[in-house]
Image 1 (cartoon, one colour):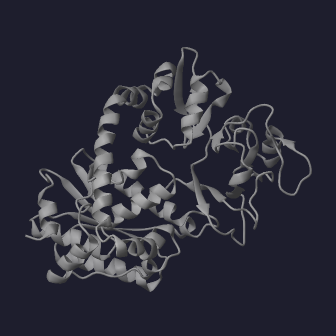
Image 2 (cartoon, rainbow, N blue to C red):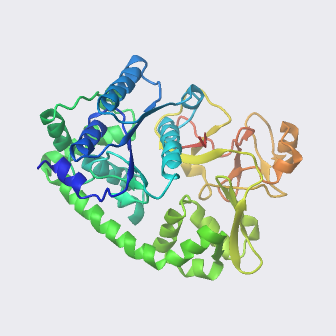
Image 3 (cartoon, rainbow, N blue to C red):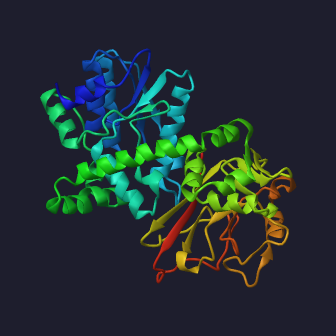
Length: 416
């Protein structure tokens, strides 16, 4: 029995309604064929981002042909060009958000609706080194889980070479994305250059890393059990006891943020609120987090009509053009950690192209932001300085330039 079929048979597929996310590449095409081989009839979903012209259409056509030939339900989603062509966006983040929206629509139908993804051992090892590079802790370094909620990844212990061997033996057709051969993205740099170089002297590198990641994920389970009741309370009531938060270890606080799908930068904001800084209220997506009178932190949906997500990533070179939806900061000129919050009465911003500073509330008024939206408009700060009013004004005090050693690209990516 091939390792592909062995891995698929380990999953309990009983009464599952399966959706396979299929790009047309070897990994996901093997996943479709393997599920067919063990007697399952998954639905198949393909996203056409339209980024590679005729090649993108050929990917869609191959997946559609295989689905039709095997009597499988097939769905294709075309990503709107206005999402992928915006200036200054994180293209990979936008594509990921677009896919996830459709995953969520599928799994929302019932607890038995699952999305099956073809991530494999090489993807997992790349993820480990990417997270290590970004300074992640236990939860980031643990990588992807074989089963998490209604997402299933059965190939995480299988090397890509095994998937290719199965594809050749089973005469599976697939298409190569030529962009994977370039090292323009950080993940591709690890995949194509850095990890192969490390494997020359350590051919068992992948297995060593995978073992370490399994141990980290087992540790995650233990930590998650300790914070389970706090997470349930937050998800059901939007409430967190300040004393409980302050008594958590740093690792447990990070685990809590992972469990409630909050960004890591919000850890310091929770601590500020728990210690009594009522002015430290902040925004996460469409939610406002704030201090309540009874020694608790609460959350409510923000009244701001601002359907954007907050992204930070390191880049090597400044772009040639700029816009008000992305800001490039010199990390060495920041006073503290970056975060979003609502405006405070004395906030001022030193805007690009202007001398001196302006009151933020006056800037928002002059820009035409309605009165009922100004009080909850997102403000980017490093704890000391207002750096950015997304889409309105860019502050000049910590902007990156050609001499900056560490450049942070901060962008507002649309929820889709």
